Image: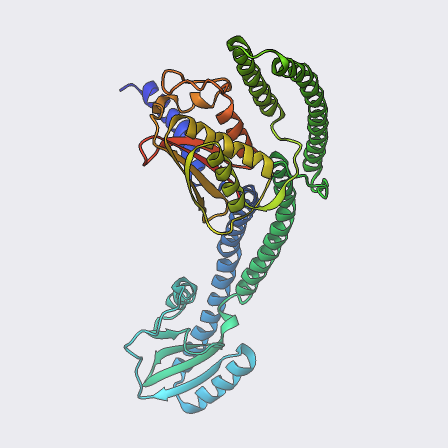
Length: 457
């Protein structure tokens, strides 16, 4: 394989695979991503600063201090070896305590321990002192930096015994290293807390905007919603408020228009029905009455679809009572229907809209089946599923979505609904989606079609 091809494949891997891996492992929420953007560079910087401090300052200072201590120890050992007697040692010990801050003891007839002292968590802290003692002393020595918290013990093999030397720990190690790390960790924690509080405040503004938009989509007005947060978030909130006002104004205008159209259509239709009732009975007149009844039903369907029940207020209702009311209406119309629902099912919704959407599902099932079952199933995360099952012929799965299109009749799959115009499922889905849910179709256990209306909690 040629080098240009191999290079192009490496670049392809770099520009395609790494972004995918980052996207897979990166957090999904804005809050977590914002924290990652702020904290990750700070953490990398802190690690770099800490490494540079220990490499360039702490290690250098420790090496210099260790070399100085090793020089004093070597001088004391050499002075004692030049005249190894108790008088010389006592004079040497007094001088070491005053001038070098070292405490010396002499143990005649003793030898160095054979065991190694317990190691530290970071043994490299002891290494500079060991190296300095190796360079300065020709005698054997034993070093312990862990037994005493504030002192270091050094034992050196001298003539006829062992010289024990105790030195303050800060004579061998730079004592400010731990303090530096503590200050660095404290400042990092403080900055992280400030960043969390600041980012949380900004993200909360976006969350409130999303909650207001979702509530408006369900038909619930939030008059207490006010723009706050960063300038860009406030601009988005102001744009949302303006959009909400325009949509509400449009809904009011459409409702007024539909009321006028409804009145204008019903007036001549009522006159025609009155004339038909006053006309002499005949087969042709019965056909005219049937056409007028169908026309009236079609007008009601068109107006209901166009109106969308958008002007109705949201109320706290018992969904179980609403479901039983729909079932009673279907039974009065001659349908064989059974209901399975909890005794009480509190919900926050537009009752007339939900009742109309559910009635459309029940009517559609009763028109093509002998038996219909209505079941309400509360969901764990809130909300409820309302299943409408029938034992009719059903429709093919490939036509499920087609059935929701306005004016769709699906005559080839089910018996033609002579009375309807193909808006029942479309209206039911529009009602469910305005409540944060949906209407879906599936195969029923009764052998026909199952229509499920899901309403969010």
